[in-house]
Image (tube, rainbow, N blue to C red; front, side, top):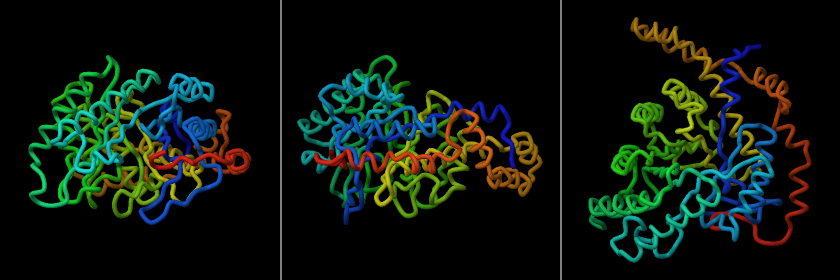
Length: 388
């Protein structure tokens, strides 16, 4: 069995992966959303489910919120509820893609009334951050156009910069704005923030408290995502990850499920660039569990990230550097492949047990009775999902 060195285990002990509140609600495709028994009916129940993931893995100490999906009357009470369960409230995600006024844009809209409404929504999100102790405001914009000539693309970029400046000016001293990008969908001809370069250009013009969010599912097929990770770390502008996996487009599947080698390559660059356990680089999941149970889906996800991080930490940096300097193409590749093919799962299971955690968190959850209990308790009301 592979033995993980003490310095690797020490590094892994500091790893934290934020869970998205919306992953615990019902989700689906444009054809069907399948409800499940025990689905949370409010943010308090979402946080309880997230806390169960953290209890079994010690990997998920914070929960991201989505506004207005997670609106409550008293965010102070929600914060205390989270703390009582051993977790904290993390990133606050805005939503300007479900209101009728935003059909043709929000922060980029030519109508000042609509743009002002979108800006005010983000200011309200910062109010939520003030109440929850959250650091990051994450913005993803479903804005763009479907047809050539439909919009003035440069004008939209100018309005976006102006809108972001107004939001940025409201941030508190230790708060950040993190701008996500996505190369298409729901707009098909052009998207206002389609790639890391556009996001970087917008946030670089704002200041030091504005960063880029990299969603691993938001790229064209064949994109070298680890190159983008390297570049943003090099530029000091990688603010956060949204980890998921994809086969075709923005599938939001369990991270590492479609291409585990890609996840390994990304984490190898994270380690190389100093992004691991770096407070400036937040790890978060952004997934939708359409047919699988939500809580075990999140457990499997954080364990996948932990496993690939362990493999990335096994890369022999001295041997890799020597091979690269000698232009030993196959030798350098072999160093990476040796680490990737190392089965770290038994060592991680043994390490978990030494820390008082279940060796197999998936099996521990299945045996816990938590799922049938919440299925019995959470009867009545409206199950949470997209938009609720």
